[in-house]
Image 1: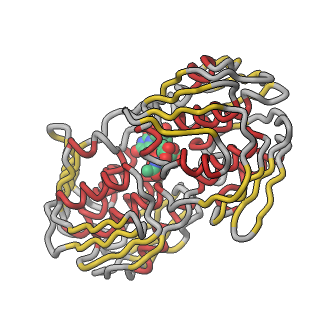
Image 2: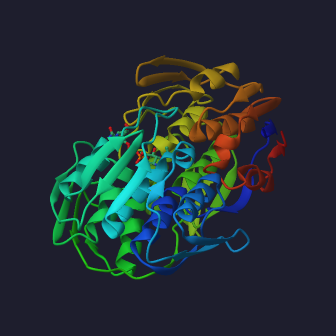
Length: 419
Ligand code: EPZ
């Protein structure tokens, strides 16, 4: 297993760029199942999760041609596909469940392995299934699989009991081919949901209100293939901005979209960073030492849970005490024990962590437990005195495209050690 070795204490500066957004690419790739033909997706990030989604589509009979050099994938979707997503693949990436809506809508049948638990929480899909049932799908759970059947889905009014990103995306993809109108209330407002709606409308769908908590969909009979370039990754962008803040550096992240990161930008400024929009990107200049800020994770446009671990690493070297409350996932403090190994002073009580900033961290061997936790350990390693070795970086590769190379180009002493 690969590891990443960092010798900390370097001030990072220069320009880098944001890759395509993982959490937009995954639902968009699944949406190709809604229309026969050849689809072209550009600015697709070169990530383990993307290759898993392509494997899922290939097992269904799609032809997927990936070019890492061009960050482009061409997918040929046949008239009939094998509407099944196997356990072997879904267990490695729960977002595979995003094929459920498109399969039920266009093929009238879907057999998708139930995603199991995950390091950060139980993460059930009851709201996805509730939405599909409201659209008239007959849902059965058997042998660890969800079976969905429907002649043709019927438009409906769906109110989510809680805000779910992939739940909104799955139901939106099902409703575009349903007969009549669908209303999705208490919908997720994440930029990735808006981006998926943009792609569906380019395919001939009639989705309005994406980005608000009420989405309206007028069903259509057929959709056509699409050619689309995916938005930049706001979480990768945010992670790079925090790299500037934690090293007292100065980094311009080209293509980062300010509107997608308002909550984070506000907190970085509150912590004493200078964040500005420049040359089609975002620039962050970190102070000598950041001040402490309190964070509550919320659904968009609130503070993103996917930035909680990274900002906790930053707060572990702040000049004060910060309170971090995780409201979205019940088990998203796995990075705390590893940060403590580096000298951080953090107390956890349920969903609340109290972080007493320390003047310095010390390098140590640490272990990644999930995607964003691994990013927080890399950031802490950039600041720590001495050498940090982050193991199990396969977690990092699921959502960051060669992060160590981007950081090295900004002046970090960092390298990947092949395992
Ligand atoms: C998406 O996951 C993202 N993944 C996650 O990013 C992100 O953390 C999350 O949204 C929240 O922003 C992708 O887009 C592929 P949810 P998702 O459904 O859709 C509960 C990363 O690091 N819930 O919005 O799975 C659920 O357990 C990943 O890139 C139900 O109870 O998250 C959680 O507590 C990690 N029943 C809360 O809702 C449901 O049917 C929000 O989950 C659905 C969700």
